[in-house]
Amino acid sequence: EVQLLESGGGLVQPGGSLRLACAASGLTLSNYGMSWVRQAPGKGLEWVSGINPTGIITYYADSVKGRFTISRDNSKNTLYLQLNSLRGEDTAVYYCVKGFPLAQFDYWGQGTLVTVSS
Amino acid sequence: QSVLTQPPSASATPGQRVTISCSGSSSNVGSNTVNWYQHLPGTAPKLLIYTNNQRPSGVPDRFSGSKSGTSASLAISGLQSEDEADYYCAAWDDSLNGAVFGGGTKLTVL
Image 1 (cartoon, rainbow over the protein chains, first blue to last red):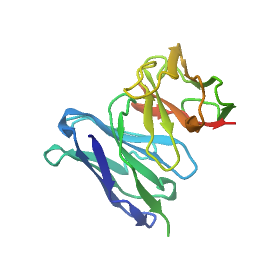
Image 2 (image 1 turned 45 degrees about the vertical axis):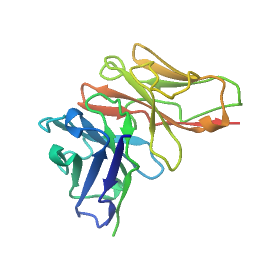
Image 3 (image 1 turned 90 degrees about the vertical axis):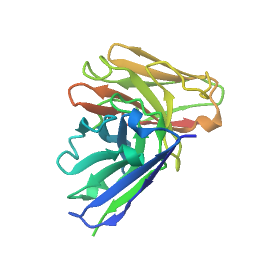
Image 4 (image 1 turned 30 degrees about the vertical axis):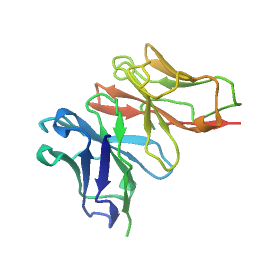
């Protein structure tokens, strides 16, 4: 059974940083492109970033470009998202999802909540 | 403002058929496949339809998808109360170099 387990969310002040992690089980992460998708309170789904299986190719939504960094450690079967210069509008549940490129996300984690507030 | 346009809401009674539209452009729906997601409150979104009209294992055949040009649609027949959820379309956008979602459609089963 495929499981994606996010961690690292929490309350952070504007301008602060967080590092999200996504531990995968039941699949070999190095075989797949992966993405992060978020949902702000009361809003729809928004793709944030994606990374190819080797980690060489990374893409970002304009809303986070230059502030967020996606990476992966295939030896640990783990995906990461470094969130810097956080803003109130970054408050959201962040989902780790299997799939990149394209928008076919066939496995989702349960999500981790990031709250940016003073 | 979402790149893909969906109606914010839809409703129908049990047993009826409902269709949800998704409108895009040549850089996304017009040139890439469309996927649909079902999102129930408090749970992770679920892939419902992939590659325009394919159902993952376990998705009932009451759900179907289609695409024509820069528009796509999701149809649900034999509507059931448990179908009440938010539905999102998504596609890759070649101009943005990223995945784009519709704003979501809240389906109410009356």
